Length: 123
Image (cartoon, rainbow, N blue to C red; front, side, top):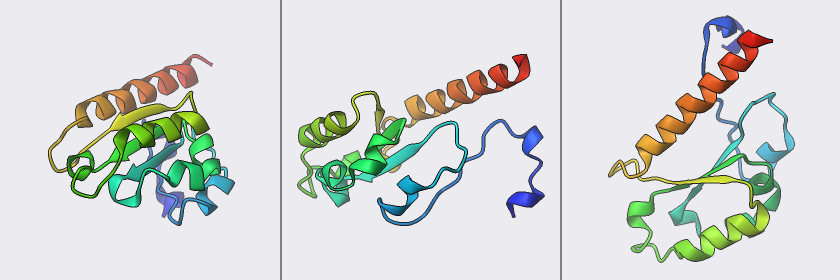
């Protein structure tokens, strides 16, 4: 399917490299931005269990924050673990259900896409 895309006309292409948190970290897809998503239902320990994925990420999305308390998720510990592995990562806390944090994430994607497009055009 990717061969059918007119890549020159795209400002943003999102590729989900499916699998667990080990395998995708090993593959360079030529991306400009690497994002890893941590769901509150998975637990705050995941950055420590899968450091390669979190260390290689530019952005970490902490998802399903609306149910964090219900699933016993320790937000502060998760943030500490993420920052321990990758202090440079930009972190977004989101809830698709409530919309919390989504506008900041959208704005970041648009700004990053715009910067990359301008960089490409000026070269």
